[in-house]
Amino acid sequence: MQGAPRRPTITSMTRVISVLAFLACACASGHNSSSNADSSTVDSSGSNTPDSPQQGSADAPDHIDAPPGTPDAKVPDAAPDANNCSVQPCTLAPQCGCPANQSCDIDPTDLMGNLCRAINTPGKETSTCGSFSECDKGYVCLNDGACHRYCATSGDCISPRGQCVIQLQNGGVDIDGAIVCSSNCDPIGNASTYCPANDKCGIFTATFKGTTYDITDCEAQGAGGQGTNCKVGTSGDDTKCAANYSCTTLDGTNFACRKYCTFQSGQCSTSCLHFNPALTIGGTEYGVCQ
Image 1: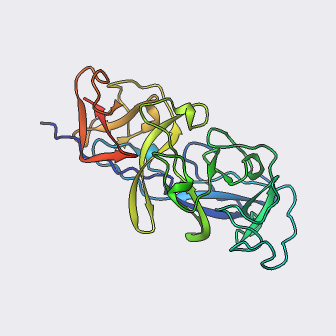
Image 2: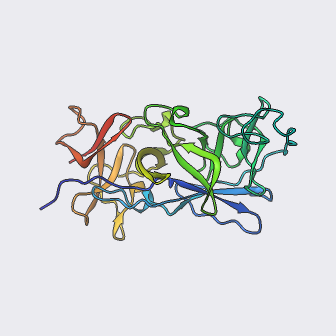
Image 3: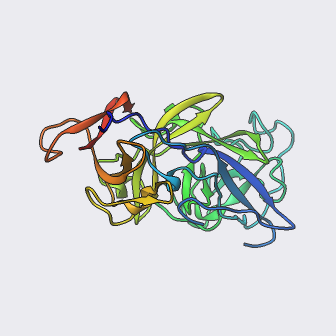
């Protein structure tokens, strides 16, 4: 007999994020996606181990790397405290210390501080990127190939689902002030509003300062609809499922794509199954169609 669906725990980007120096070698392992001397990779290491219904291995990467970035020119540091920023020469969130046409970002040469960099393309949440300079002021390019917003509190993120809970790290050590927002995307909505093209919105867990948070975030999408087998090995692969669908299991053995729902009439041809305990993000409870 199948049990009631249990709440999934699916790792987000640690959606703890590590930054590894791209000096002698590049160390990168990808989540949804993806160089030069003077570059860095930003990795997220975490643990996404789903219960049932669960998202599978694709939702629980060990690492998510950020593509290397090459700022055009390192701007000389300002005189100590001359710009009244809390960190010199500039701060990530709030942005302080850089000219209006430049962004404060992590220094990719040593990952030991910040610098002002050029903005060649003002990429935001829906933008893909291959280097730091392809993201707008206050954004960083990660190796899911997208720009992510720096934040100091969740008030800096897009509401109601965006949360300031993804910590950038260098070799497992937190980088001061380098925290980015989770996405405001809606698993039952149009992902293109907050995700890059060809991505969908999924549900993850993020561990931040010892606390686990349920978040929504962008990920690669597949083609599987309701009931499509998405099992790979002994677990499920969420990227086998189409937008608005998640790879879930009711018995811990059989995995199938099921449509996300929010318990509104007409969303499912049968019934919308609650997770146990309830899965609520941004004030909305999510389940999957039976």
